[in-house]
Length: 160
Image (cartoon, rainbow, N blue to C red; front, side):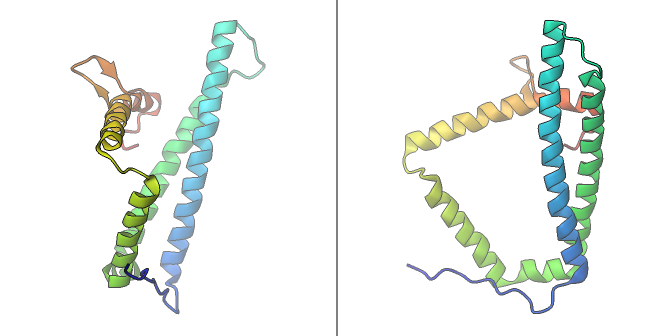
């Protein structure tokens, strides 16, 4: 058994990289929260439509606002990730052997922890993945419209 790799953190953290990582973490958290809010509002909107429920503030405009906020958050997240990738500190970190070793070890841990050990399980996972991709992107040959197309129509942002 090989010893677990260690990743030594630099004594001085690059302030620009630290700030960008802080933004990336908070933007991810914000977008995830907004997605939960959007899905809840969508469920409420559908229920109100089908039950003829009258609410003081309609859910649909709130859904649209959530979609706009998510699109803006995604644009900000893209910009922060791009900026982080251009920093010399990021390039130096990714070029270290210890960093590469951590990624290799993480891959091994994921394989072991996932418990996938036989061919049937792998085939079942591949089938589930293919079905998920079809739900996401659709299948023109089979006439399946994916949620990504519908999502993009909602707020016209094609890179989500």
